[in-house]
Every structure is written in C-alpha cells, then in structure tokens.
Image (cartoon, rainbow over all chains, first blue to last red; front, side, top):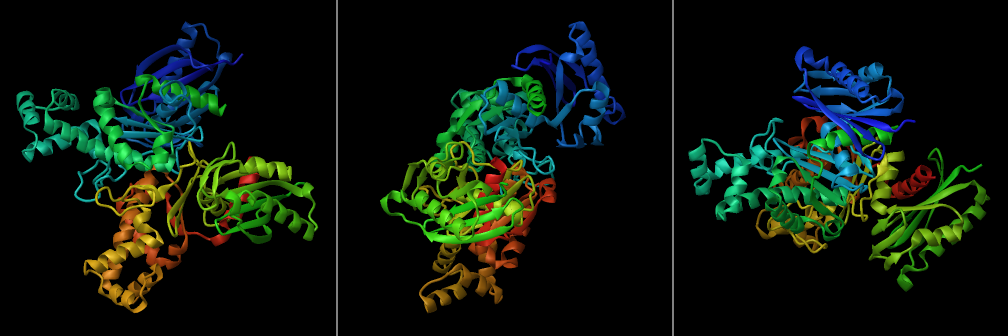
Length: 319
Length: 319
C-alpha cells in the first residue's frame, strides 16, 4: 500500500529530508550537506542515495512511496521541473525533476523553497489548510509564498510571491540586491532592520542603538528588539517605522489575495508580540475593513521543518 | 447533446445575457432592465423568464444547456452562491444561486462581476487563456479580477482582487467611498483623474484645465486626455503623476501574482497609448526585471461583453 511521502528541502548549505505519512505524521527526518562543487550536479544523486540508505535502515519498502516533493532555491518552472537559476547552488536551467525521477522511478514535484514552506505551514502549521494564505519569511531577505484556491501560486516564470521585491519606498529608497531601490526586503528583513538602525544612528536619532553598536562593534535585529523591550523610545519608533511599511504591503496584499491567514516566519518572527502588535496596528490602518475581518496574522509553527512538510504535501496533492 | 452555455452579467441598471457555445461562439445576446424594487427580489425570476423566452424564440431545447454562469455586483461566496452585500441592487445575504437553480433546474455558478469579466477576457479577449492574469478596470471606480492557476481568485470572503482599495498614498490621501484614504481608486479611476485635476487647478498648477473647467462648468477624463494630446505640459504631468501610482501598484502585483498579462479595461482605457505608454514606463521602473519580462500590459478586447463570456466560461470550467 502506498502510504508514505518524501519531502526534500534544498538549501545552499544543507538539504533536509523527511519521510511523512499521508496524514502528515513525520516518520523520520535527516540532513546532508549540499555539495555545490561541479555546479551542483551531484545534488540529485546525493539526495536519492541518502533516501535509499534511510529507507533500508528503516526497513521501508519502495512500494510504499507515493512520490517526492522538493523545495529548491531560485526560479522554477513547476511543470517542467527545471530550475532556471539558483545562484547559491550553481544551477542554471538544471532539470532537477527529470534527473530525480530517473533515479528514483517515482513521481517528483518541484517548486520554489519559499512556496513549498508556505504549503507546509498551510498543511500542518499555522495555516490550518485555509484555501487562501500568504506566508511571509523575515530572514536575511524577505520571502513569500502564496496559497490561492488551495494551490501554490508559482506564477508565469516562477516569480510569484516575490513580495520582498515589492517597492515600498518609491523615492530615495535603499539599494536592493535585485539592482533596484526601495524593495520591502531592504528594510523589513533582518539585514534591513540593521540597515535602517545604522541610518538612524548616523542621523543622531538612535542614541541607545549607537551605544550598543560602539560597545559590540556590530548590531543585530536581536539587539534592536532587546533595546526596544527595555523601553527605549527611539528604538520602538524605529520598529514602528519599519513595520508601518510591512503592514502597508501586507494590507495591499490582503485586498488582492484576500487570505484567511498571513503566516509570519523567519528569524525576525522570533520577536513575537514585539513584532506582531505594531504590525497588526499598521495592517489594520491600511487594510480594507472587509479584507481585515477575514484575515488573521499569525506566527509560523513549523520552523525549519516547513519545507519537508510542504514537499510531502505537494507530492500528495499532485499524485 | 449539451453544447451551450448561458452567461449573465448583472448590473445596477441592466442585466446582460448571452448564449454561447462551448467553443466560445456567441449565438445571441440581449439585455433587460434591472428591477431594483422590493430589494431586488425579482431579479432571478426576470433573468430566467428572459432566458426561457429567448430559448423558445430561437427554438433551442433546454437539454442543450450545460449551465448558467453569473457575474453579480458585491461580495459573493462562490461556493454557497450567496451575495453578502450588493448595495446597488438591494441584496443582503441573497441566495442567488439557489433561487436560479430551483427555477432553471440547471447548475448555476456565481462570482463577482469584476472577476467574471476578467475570466471572460481570459477566455476570449486579450487574456488569451494565460494561466496567470490580472484584469484592471478603470471606470467610475477601479476594479480588479485575478486569474491564478487558471481559476478566479475570489478569496476568503469575496474581497480578492479589490485592487481599487490598495493604499497608494499612505499619508494625506484623498477620501475614498470605503471610509479610508489614499486608495488607488481615489486617483486612478475616471472620477479620480478629475479629482486630482481639480486639486491641481486649485493649486494653480493646471491652467489649461482651469480654462476648460470654466468654459464647460465641468471636467471629464476625456477632457484631460484631449488637452494632454494637444501638448499641454502640465496636463501631461498630471497624467504621469496618476499613472506613476497605478504603475507602482501594478508592479507590486506583478511580483506577487507574476501574471503573463495585465489587461486594462474600463472607460479610461479608451485613452489607448496616452494611457499605456506612461503606464508601461512607470511599471518598468518599479517592477522586478524577471516579473516584468514575463508580463505584457494590454488593453481589454471584449468591452461590455466580457461579463457574459466570463459567466459562460465559469459554467464550462465548473461543470
């Protein structure tokens, strides 16, 4: 009887794997290092070898496997399963789906890692299987994943849900890695918080942060939230300033996607209520009341496991 | 053999009907007045009576009908087919689907009129059946319709694609009918163009428009585009100012929905290149290059027939 799914989450440093039942119970999970030598060509072979070894160890027969769902970085065509560009790994027009299918003799389904993580949160995390959901990851950058009518919205060329590149400061914004200026991720990512803090320090608007920077020689988002928690007014204003832009972007997405849940994940989400309270306030200010009524902003549940659950659920949905 | 679809487009003044083949050939179309007396309770009876009469006239048997697809104003739950609120007609929690199904003994599918018009453009208009599409209607207000993975994105409580209520002027924006300020439709609708023009006249920034207003006693979007066409610099600046906001909103939607087409319709779209050229310029400035590459901005094709085609296609998709 086919009852098991394999979820795979490929990152630039490690590759996470999970064996998960159709009902969503995690049987086993493990990681391997990502081999980025030789333009990442070994990656699918490493993945399949590690799955084979683990199945043997667990005495699980191949005949129980429904399929493999994979989250990979970069821009992906989910139908062909070709990764157009994944800079961190070295892939360029890399036919990940075909290679893994030939190796495993199983159906393989692929999508962008942020989309797959969103699907995982939708299935077994804070998303609670709502039909319309937006996942936002506040990490080094700002990532996004959209579930529309119960399905991942990958878009025309894999650029769906790239909400980190919504322009939120139309004039004189910070420079973004994408080559433009004013993108959401230039201010609302972990690096963005620090970037804005440093500017406020330069402008003489953030003395407590200046002291911390001088003491430590560096500054982190954690420092910013810690100093704010101590009651420092200017640091709280800094957080409000940033979250006002994020709240505006999410409100504009709420009248577009009309989600039942906006799930916030990534390192910055560890700030908990320090993040969610001012964010909710800004969201409420900018969102159409009817869209706001339908939508709850929640913190992600699954952490680093979101990708393997999402991969597994993609395989279940598509098979 | 079942080979025909009925598309219905309910407006506050008239109701449009079409008999359309599965392949999308229009067999016949007609309109009736919308009876808004008695809180619009007669509307489904009027619709079915007019369809029966027309089928009899055309000697088409009921056994050829696949189903009825309806676009209605207001917020709609497409599963129950209940219209939550449709102010223009007087409906409040009105079970349009159930009543029409009981009358016709046919499957009836319902969605918001703007969404249905988008689906019509997608099927037989400028949308050319791309899987991901955004339709924007620049009329009295600004409406929207989203096709995501080939399906209408209605959202959690029928507020999907309400892009007229994206906040584009976060501070000191114009008042909107929705009770908030700074919504896209306060400036980019036909009424919005005139609103901004009148402010520029007050501020002494639009002399040619002021002369036209004094001559006529009023001002229209058509006047604005006409004066711009004559080469008037400040009026062209006014158009660029407005379209800069619209282009920013569409660019932010392009990195979210990653559509292959953005289809612009409504009265303002009659300005043709005077609209599309500055809009494309602004869109190009704000859009992530990869999202821009995938996306073509085009003018809508079907005009007032978009709704009946969309209704028919919805019935085809769902049946």
